[in-house]
Amino acid sequence: MREQLTEFAAENARLRAEAATAPELLPTPDLAGLDDLVVLKIEYRNWRQQTSRKWHFDEDAKQMTWRDLFGSIAIKLLKPIADDALNHAIALTLTSITSNDYKVRVSEFDWETVKAQFISLGFVELNYSKTIGGGAALFWSLTELGKRVGLLLRNR
Image (tube, rainbow, N blue to C red; front, top):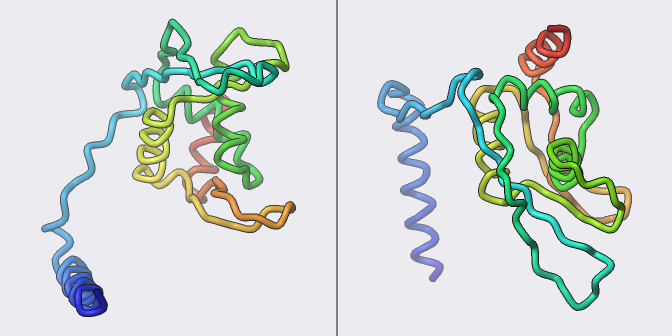
């Protein structure tokens, strides 16, 4: 096992050195344009029903442009926000659920796509940090580019 880890570490170092000296060999990310549509599935559950822990999908997936989605996220990122809290806040804005009995979120697959898109565009950074409760969580924050773009989108 130790030998295998050593081999993996050596291969990783070799690949990093190769990528640093030949950036044109790296694949270009397949980014969506800001005006392309993104479809987000929303999951919900009634947290008061102790017998049901299953998440249910909203019947209608929510559709918007990447521009509109980032415009709605950016203002929330002026201070770091936990991944789960941001997911919940965005899901709430996309649904008509107003009862506190429901926990809503963007489906995990769609949320990971949102993260990948905005990281690739250089708009956000994600970092694990300590929480006030003593644990750790993934936090979103805006990059300088993200601040400029987000504020421009907000002022449209």
